[in-house]
Image 1 (tube, rainbow, N blue to C red):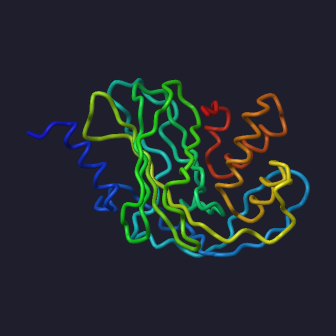
Image 2 (image 1 turned 90 degrees about the horizontal axis):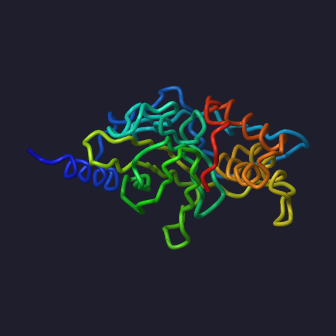
Image 3 (image 1 turned 30 degrees about the horizontal axis):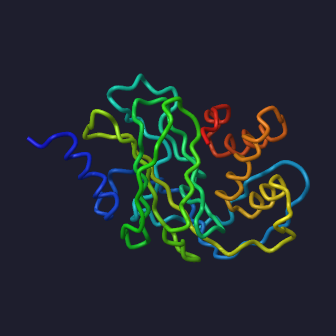
Length: 251
């Protein structure tokens, strides 16, 4: 009989090389694809609002995305909130960055590391890394490093994060999402623009990841700022991620 560690490593290899069956992560047939390669923004003053850019359909033959997972590490207590990818309900998040930042809620866990995988549209493994995680639980920012492959403009990529449970087990907590790089939005935005202005701008343009990371930085820099907290909570609640709104930011 093969050991749990062997089976766990086999699963992670399947994720990287794209051989994991699409039945392992169910897609929502009604999820829209964000196929726009260029988005136009006309941000107004006020609250940050996320506006998905299109109503086209996702081709779920690629496996779609799984935001939360009910699976837990055997040694962990029951998760109040499961491992959850902070992505829009469509399962596809836009970015203008060649090396974007992903956000994932990680529950309190005995695991000390997680395994990140990035695959292209042909399900070829492009990048993988093991990431140290705190045991306290909260929202983790994962920056794709400068030496990782750049996301190509107009291409959609699959990414996943799996907790490396200790001891190893065959059924591991894992979430998956899709990310698509688009051209920067037209509009009045510069390097001198405030983080809040950038968040408002990207939210209006439907650029999820850039909007959310700016809100995360704002919330972490001023935890007592009610405006920053309200904007953070508002965009999460609008995408059925409200349970995560008051959890701590880990980095």
